[in-house]
Image 1 (cartoon, rainbow, N blue to C red):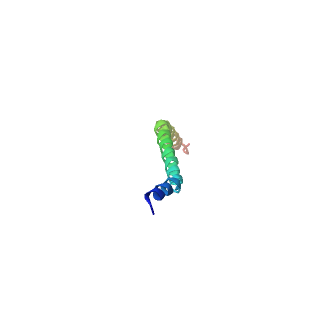
Image 2: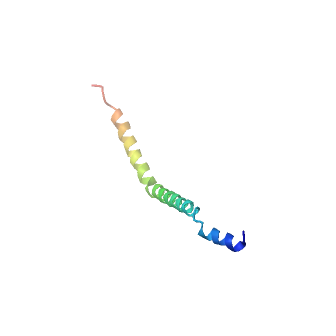
Image 3: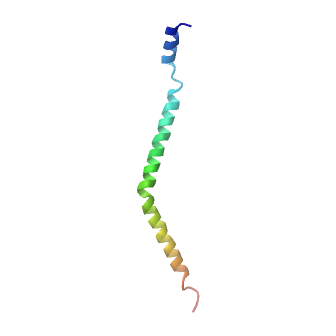
Length: 65
C-alpha cells in the first residue's frame, strides 16, 4: 500500500469521531454537574440542617403530660 492510499484512507475513516463526541458529552456533563454542586451545595446543606433542627425540635417535649 502506498503512502498516498494510506493517508487517503486515514482521512476518510470516521470511526473514532463518535468516540470523541461521546467523550466531549461526558466532559460537558461532568462540568455542569460540578458547577451545580458548587453553586447549590451550601444551599442544600443549609436546607438539610434546617430539616435536622426541625426533626430534633419535634422530638423534644412531646408525649408527657
